[in-house]
Length: 473
Ligand SMILES: Nc1ncnc2c1ncn2[C@@H]1O[C@H](COP(=O)(O)OP(=O)(O)O)[C@@H](O)[C@H]1O
Ligand SMILES: [Mg+2]
Image 1 (cartoon, rainbow, N blue to C red):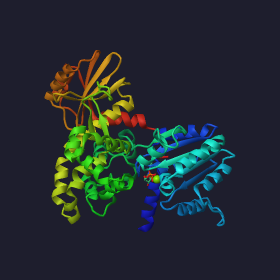
Image 2 (cartoon, rainbow, N blue to C red; image 1 turned 45 degrees about the vertical axis):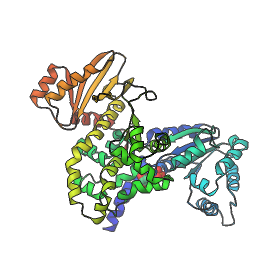
Image 3 (cartoon, rainbow, N blue to C red; image 1 turned 60 degrees about the horizontal axis):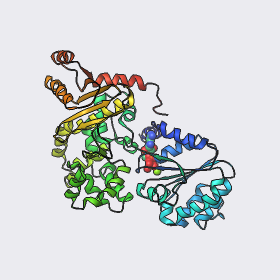
Image 4 (cartoon, helix red, strand yellow; image 1 turned 30 degrees about the vertical axis):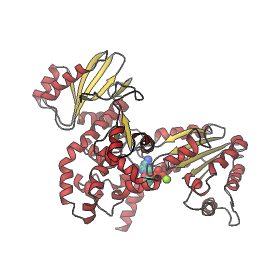
């Protein structure tokens, strides 16, 4: 039994899902023959370490160092161990370590410092020290230095923002994000598209969550795994906010207020009782952590729109702030029967916005309708909404997505909505339906020139398109 489990775990460990774009950036970075710094950042669990380890396997001359938490002496000792240096070897200071790198860098070498912010925790001047050594010496070598960190705020403060010590020295930046639905769907090969979307709506695209997904079990069983006070996912959001921010409660209350439907700056600020002017700094960190996103109607400029609204962009965090955190006391007592029933009843409504996001992602990434100049959802001040508006040079594509069936009423409504848009170009109307439409609905659609695509058709199109793409390595 134990052996079987081990094999399953090892198998899981071996698969490496699509990070092709990021690998390409790293390959480019490595190819250049001059010194360079690449910054890799993103929320814990998003796959930074895995990406760098996979990449470093393809580079013959490299060192990968995982920085532990602790004082410099502890870090220095760990570095020496990881480099298998003889025991008399010491790095009394961070400068000593940089001087050691300097020697190695006489020849081209990739050096990865994973969780670099931990060095800054131990040696607050570390980035300035690195900047000094970089400007004087390292920049003239052939070192390819990768600085990686989960603490998004810290990575900005030390390496990317205008006042950061390393500002202007960084030549590549990789902001590692969760897998989009297009990529997520590939890890569940063989599972019906509908179920893939449901599982995505619950677990999201964070690679560290994938081991918790059981596509063979029922949806309810998958949900129950999160509602278990001993499970990692029950605790994860709070743990991550506590590790990566100084005021986890503040971030948590922002997420909870967005989950409650507060979507503008003023609404969020009022709900949690702080000044609207002090909110943007927190929102920015949550955006960089890929937890929230500000959206504007497809026809608006993001920086100018007055109709922007915030939403929780990570499906798992949406699930957690909606169902888990508010009911944590019930969950902790173990009496979740009622809660599970409510979640299962709610699920179609809960999944629907994730389905809509997934369809927008598919449309713009898969080329199924060609390429758009701009696209997105659309809404106005009066409460009218359209799931998809995509603008091409001479065409405007207007679509509605239905997780359930399309009714005749949905079709006539789509025509009315299309009249609200004041955009030049031939209108192309379409719907995506979770189910096959009835013959009478289909004939009305044909008559009114509305194309209906079913989720199944889209699924087949994507399977065909993604066949042979590098899924698991
Ligand atoms: N692209 C991927 N394919 C498969 N598993 C992944 C991928 N990225 C990350 N993982 C797995 O997810 C977990 C968290 O990834 P990790 O690289 O440690 O995240 P981070 O360093 O960003 O905190 C690990 O178990 C890792 O093996
Ligand atoms: Mg890591």
